[in-house]
Image 1 (cartoon, rainbow, N blue to C red):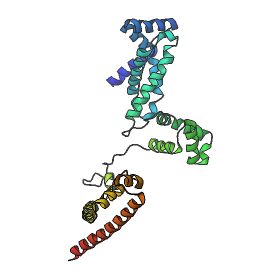
Image 2: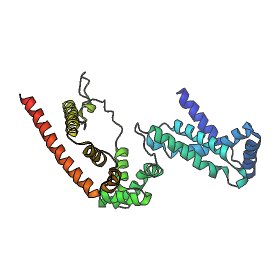
Image 3: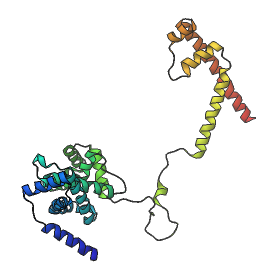
Image 4: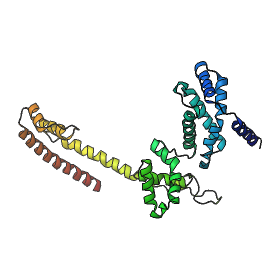
Length: 291
């Protein structure tokens, strides 16, 4: 009750603050910018706190305390005062409105959900305008065309994809849910949590071990099979088959002092020898396992 009373007093004080004339507002802004006059900053900020409260009230439907929204708006107001340039002949309230709204919106995006959303300007616009546009379309009777048409209309209006609209609509229509929350609402200990129903797409441990064993076995077969090649055959196979940037027949022929057709013939013969050697290695390994 005491805290609520303080808040009411703060709001009454802000709403009762006098309005500043254009020249008086400019004089305070110049005094703060040029001389660092904190008294001028305080008077300038106090005169615009009703603007902060008014803007904060527009975002009260996001489920966050209005006092926190006002506080964040005040931060935006002070940021506007620090950046304001009186010589541009723009009213401070006009300039400060953008900073106040941006500060409040950033606070909402950081605290509305555990999962961070609105990381881009398009997503931010979608987050803060989706409900308003849906309500407008409902008043106009556009909802009769189904969600697909509604999502496409909103996507066109905001310059985003229909898939983004559908995803944001889903997020706004339901609260966050912890994966560690129980499946049922009963108080029984040891009950199943939602995280236990998540499917792991990774292979099973026995499959991982089996793949590793098979890979090691194939590497061993290959090393043994390469021993049947001559030095020239081995060089051609390495440079043509076992490197990321395979050498061309012409380049390899120039290095070895033979024609590219001869390189092709040697490569073909070497590959046939490798196939036979690998077949014998795999067959011998299988026989060893059987025996």
